[in-house]
Length: 368
Ligand SMILES: Cc1ncc(COP(=O)(O)O)c(C=O)c1O
Image 1: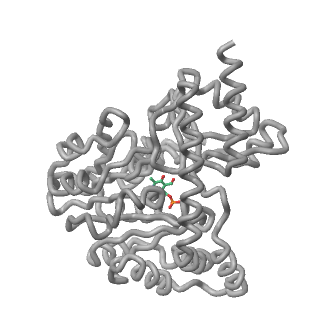
Image 2: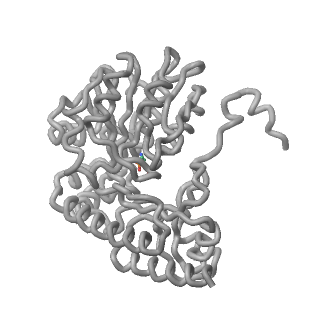
């Protein structure tokens, strides 16, 4: 059956393609007939959730026959207190992904432009297209980082939203708040500027308190519980913005977009900062170990400030295939136009050792 009429009815869908997530372990096991695999493809926290978050979810499980609090009051209060902002400034989402999509849908429509780096998180382009807006992908600077000058120059009267991931996925690059504030100062006052801090916790000591240090009337800072907080499967993220912005975006929000277990888990995880700090320290130390090995083998794709490293090799497709044969799942970066690159999430020490052993063997084979 032809579905061409769909593309005519909703023209913005013609260039739209679905987000391709990291390959699930079960899929690789089935594909390769393996009994063990390690997923290093989605920048998850490999250590599991905070015990406090798990206990909170277990305690709340008996209540899931009821809808959750649609306003997630407890979680909003906890986030507001954590950031010392008013609760009306907190916007919650089914993952920060939903927060990004809601913002773009609310502020950018047909004829509007959404500006981002062409090597930035791919959801900005997908969300802009889905909203019927024009995605404007700006070339990156040397070293793959956001070219803030070029991005400021790309902003015009049609621009409604600007997106910056800091630090950025998939490049791992970071801008300091001074550079970001100079960038914000160059932008018109009436654009929405999303600073996506999904990986903030991994650089908290270097970045400082961006929620209070950065300023622009349209500033939105988004964070997630999916990475350092270890709650990717719960799907919960948030943004801090002016109360007028959150009120408008809330009109687009599904009534119960953050589920009951996610709400209680996030409250408990936020309260367990000691656990987060310890896991971030583990992850950053392991990242250094991975990066040193890749650099020693001449296949590092640059320094990363996130919970992943970049591998660069002209035979990255072959390395991907051979890693998967050995039960290691990295993430190919071809969808970002980075065909020579693989992104490898930082796993536990044992998982990383397994990955490095596999890589060493594969490189020896390829060199032979
Ligand atoms: C830069 C960036 N922003 C946002 C997200 C969305 O994460 P989530 O929806 O799990 O909060 C991701 C996920 O990988 C990401 O890398």
